[in-house]
Amino acid sequence: MNNNLHGIIFAYHQNPDLRELVQIRSTSSIPYAGRYRLVDFSISNLVNAGVTDVGIVVYNSYQSLLDHVGSGKNWDLSRKHGGLRILPPFSFSDRFGQRYRGRMDALAGVRSYLKDIRQDYVLLTSGDLAANLPIDEIFHKHLKTGADITVVCGIPDRRADPRMNSYITLDAKDRVIDVVSSPVAAQGEVSLETYIISKTLLLDMVDRCAAHDIPSFTQGVLMPNLNRLNVYAYRFGGYAARVQSVTGYFQQSMDLLDPAVRTSLFHPDRPIRTKDTCNPSTYYGPDSRSVNSFVADGCIIEGTVINSILSRGVRVAKGAVVENCILMQKTCVAAGATLRYVITDKNVQVGQERMLMGHTTYPLVIAKDEVV
Image (tube, rainbow, N blue to C red):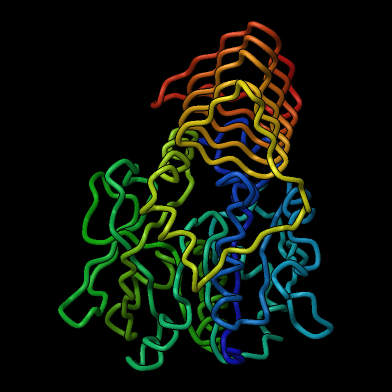
């Protein structure tokens, strides 16, 4: 049990490039890999490292997230003291007519919570990051190097838009010597926006950024302090995906069909936990066909499913074809329908003989509860 590290998960983002997928939820609450939500990875990473106190920073549209995480029982975080806490903007003044502009805005909004943290160190991470991080190993390196801040970095995804990421340059000892934000082209290693910092230093930086109206952690904490503070990096070599657009979400979901990616994300020594819904096993009809697909429990498959990811309770009727698709919970595809490169949100109904086709670079998205 790691009693000296506290977890803060930022779950307030609603990236507009995710279109229909964030109409009713934050990015962190988007279904991923059939039976999970993106936030499951961040919570599980912390729990696997023995962290018992976790705060999730939200702003609005967090009902879906709250329904999913509940009291934290499924992650063994339902406790009288500490455990899982949802942190709405209870002390944030909406001076700018918009939500949090960055992480330092968000931390200023929950400063009273930060002040009462019992641990000496805090891990800051994103709720939209799908990665199986060895948090205990990262924390051990942070202590061993005597770092003021440890940044977790990874291998850049060539498909990602560099303008939506930050990149760091390291010396031979993994000390951070440069940070760039939203460049035209990738430079160095990509930041996974996961940091370890002491509680004392974090509070000091929150107050300093608030006083200078700096909302960004990268621009307010990292960039101006590389020469003053010891900032080191932890190089993570496993699979990591930050969901930032519909195309990215589709491609990163399709990555799961690669056994090597699944092995990296669902490491047997660091299990990813999620909400338990006690679904029955999936039923495959006598004429059904399922090829290279990720199918959750509780589905009824009587048609053809190829290279697709199906969440709990999906129904594919006899004669229907689902290929290169992501179908979320309780989607129903009627007889004779054909879907290719389609993402359906929850409770979508596709009628008989309908044909829906997108493209790998622009998948078709059907919003929640729609009837097509």
